[in-house]
Amino acid sequence: MRIDGRTRVCGLMGYPVEHTLSPLIHNMLAEDLGHHLLYVPFSVEPDRVGEAVKGARALNLMGLNVTVPHKSAVIPWLVEVDELAEKIGAVNTLVRCGDGYKGYNTDMTGLQSAMRTDGIELSGESVVVLGAGGAARAVAFLCAHAGAREVWLLNRTPERAVQIAREVNDAFGRDCVHGLALAAHEEIPKGQYLAVQGTSVGLYPHTEEVVIREEGFYEKIHTGYDLIYRPGDTRFMQLVRAHGGKAYNGLKMLAYQAVHAYELWNGVKVDEAETNRIIQILREETNVI
Ligand code: ATR
Image (tube, rainbow, N blue to C red; front, top):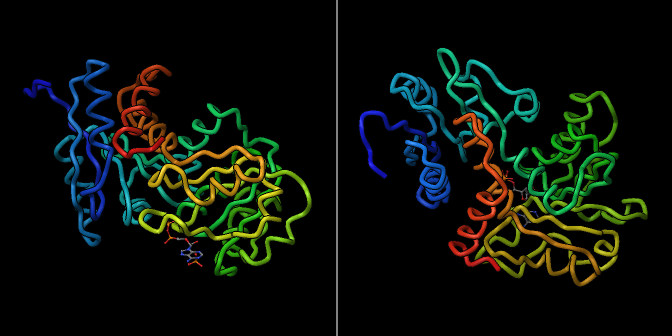
């Protein structure tokens, strides 16, 4: 791409940013769609988040992605926050808006879109979420927002799951999320559930690890979503499949969160063929089958 005086700039702020796949995705989208846009990584130290947002606006950057550890810390520096992102308390996408930026959480809208392409609707669904870190917390909010029937949030440290359940139930005014210890999974009523694996357990190189091994748990799972995409086939996914369920990794979510951010920045709709091209490139890049 030719860079000239009209090139618009987007980027990622995180710490660290060295392993991100976002520049690959966004620069490819810009090239394929013929947009004059450049996307670059910015390493922003934790105590410089506010300066970074103000500096980005001063430099007229059209948008930013935000990653670990800044997803919550950036919120006080924004002029506006989308309703779902505000409830979650985390944003990953900033869109230039007036004198500053508006924050969105396209991680979650991206997960929802990825699920839809696999035929899954959260509305009315019974869901099990494993974990109570930032990712699992966001998934619990998304489930309530999308109208899930019930959410069983399971975590090694049960207090964190109980706390998130309380926050989600308060935010949506209904008692749909239940926080439990991982070890208490037998208390989940008989039935068929969608399970979202939101812990860091099973991430490369610890690919044999999984938070729940008991067969009885997997017999209740009709579909398993692992938010991990490295490796592309986790132990959790293998256990879901071994008990007759369908299993998916986090690669499509990664692609859709980027596509949604790109759409917000450029005011365009990225079609399915282009999104599938991005997914294919990411598969090759991460060696996911
Ligand atoms: P993220 O923001 O990516 O979700 P995080 O906030 O560090 O990351 O959360 C990591 C999640 O993985 C937590 O739910 C954590 O459980 P605890 O709250 O009990 O720490 C979970 N986790 C990490 N290592 C684990 C392990 N060995 N067994 C079970 N759960 C684990």
